[in-house]
Amino acid sequence: LPVVAVRTGAAALAPEGAQVLKEAGIPVYPTPERAVAALRALVTINTPERKNLAPATQPGIPVPQKGASEKDLKELFAQAGLPIPESLVVTSGSDVVGAVGTVGGRAVFKAVVPGLLHKSDAGGVVLDVSAEKAVDTFARLQALGGDVLVERFVSGGVEVLVGVSSSPMGRVLTVGVGGVLTEIVASAAVRVLPVSKWDIGQMISETTLDVLLAGARGAPVADREALVIAIDQLAQGVRDWPDDCELDINPVTVLENGCWFLDAAYVEPPTQ
Image (tube, rainbow, N blue to C red; front, side, top):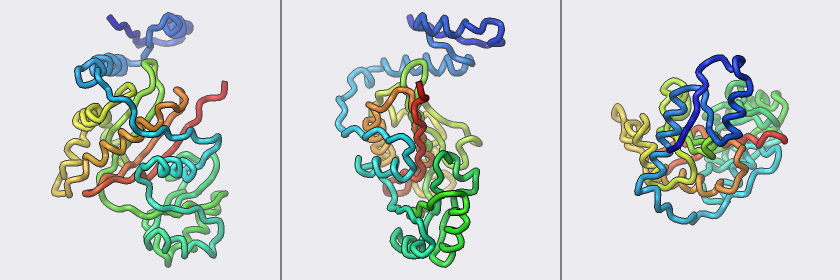
């Protein structure tokens, strides 16, 4: 039978305890809730639908180079067939109006600053920028210390969080409510990789996404199938990435037809 450990007391009382358990091959979790979630994942991966996972059919996505920007990461995704909006990096204010026209006339501006992962918190993201506002917006973001990514603006839809990270049980996929509702709703499902499309569908059904994608409060029904396919492509594509790296796609915006990966962040493995 599988065994997991939970540390509910002060870690200072037995500072070496967690390491001893890990060396013995026993996963250690900080809360009972996370331990139960891990055991549930073990049960899930041994269901009949999981036991016969099909071989990977999607090509692997190259591991991002050290210091890769969001633009670099999205280019790797686009080359693998994932749904990425058109974008370009602008380095001069004289080019920014033309860039907005190139991506469709309505754009998202994002500051491209090395090491700046949470651009929104730093005022580094401006939505729905028109050609008339492009020059002023560009100057404001460039003042943060870098170039500016100009990306096609996608409005509406259901926002989804998709993440890949490490855990004591191995690499895991997280799918849940994304965008501004991520922390407010706190509804997500987790599975140990690899996963199947059936798994991904089950994960969606376990969260508030099930209601949101079905058209809550009169909203249009979103393309659930496109979301499942895109998550499956991503999960297969990163199968050979380092075990201790992290990937955060938030949001994936799901429309009536299709979906788009709008924001992406990659955290490199810690230096050994």
